[in-house]
Length: 260
Image (cartoon, rainbow, N blue to C red):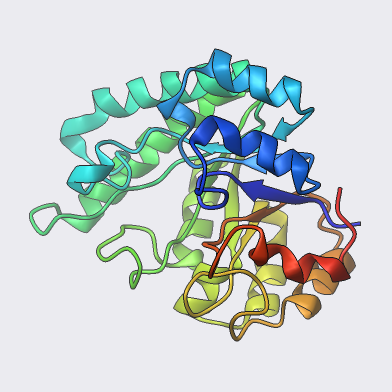
């Protein structure tokens, strides 16, 4: 049985944010994930989750001012205070919503910031966040993101991500493995997944090109899903795709898979 979690930040965007939880239930989901829940109060989201008997499996830490180009705060020496505030806010939402995983976006590296200095700050901030999350039994995730969709993003190499996790050496710091980003960056999806499987905490999917639903591109998702089962991956599979047409039409691929 496949445990698909529909991402209500990228799917069901035809309706306002709070109405997307009802949509998730109507389309047979019991698991959801969300990029940034901070557009609504934790209390209102909790009401929707309870009403439709949904479990929220993943959120992101606040990533700064998205409209002005922020894609995370963790690499900036002059924004450490702001980053720590984002950790507090993420924990507040995660505990209220009973979320287990929080993804920390690194940020876009500006030309004036030395990459090695950014990496040092990033590791220090991740250590801080991991210690704070551990107090609440929460897992911190980091994710390599492809530089085509997000130019200048700091973390684009899964090997570097794995090295950072090893350096931090805390059991609640894991990889978020997005098959879409990995295909755009390097391919060899199953081999790479197997290599880093012990570090992987959460999986997300979308097809290439376009970041649409499975079956619209070059990734053989039927093979991927069977592979995940054979590996022993039992976590949720996040549907962080952008429907090619409508959200309803984007679920045609699900007929081949059993949902939980």
